[in-house]
Amino acid sequence: MTDSIRISELLDLKETIAAEIFDGCTFPWEVLPKIQSFIIKLGQTLSPEEYDHPSEDVWIARTATVYPSAHIQGPCIIGRNAEIRHCAFIRGSAIVGDHAVVGNSTELKNVILFNGVQVPHYNYVGDSILGYKAHMGAGSITSNVKADRSPVAVRCGDEKIETGMKKFGAILGDHAEVGCNAVLNPGTVAGRNSVIYPLTSVRGVVPPDSILKQDGTITKKNG
Image (cartoon, rainbow, N blue to C red; front, top):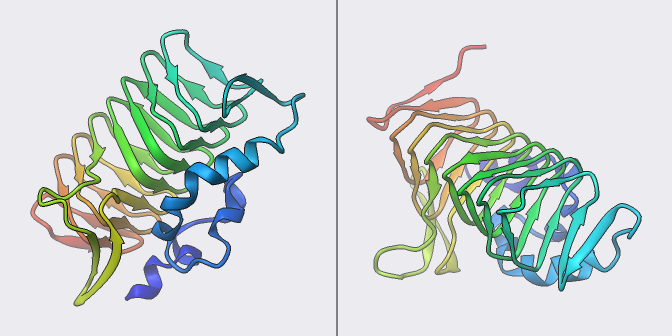
């Protein structure tokens, strides 16, 4: 079952400016400690004709829309035609992909959002990676630290994969859909095209092309 949570099975690397960060990695969470330094290195290579550089370690595509009330702290790269809405709070170490939406009162920290991702309403996304066109409904969050502060493990069926990281939120595969007010507990991995019902507390791995209901039942998607 661990094959389903490998980078190649979860994420289309053609849909992110950060593809190079995944080189030599097997599982996507392996890149989380590298995001900050990667952004600084990559940002220095971006064309000034395409990207503004308004403050230290912050690069914003000239075609992006950033509302005046948004707060952006570096290191950060915001991609082409992205939209950073009212009162968004980007705390740093964030890559926001092309055509992505970071919405009202949404907070980001140490994340990679692939192209087309939407976190549009009251979301917290920390120490996480969201694949191409993944979407988080209003109020849904990633919980990135366990209550006892112990290292996060990914539970995949009967297997337990130790990550060694105390901060690790969630990985959403391409086109994953998270319902309103769902909580993605530390170490959650949602497969490609998966759906998580609203108000669900999620732990472990949600298989690709499946639906996770509030009672923990997992069913296959039709079609």
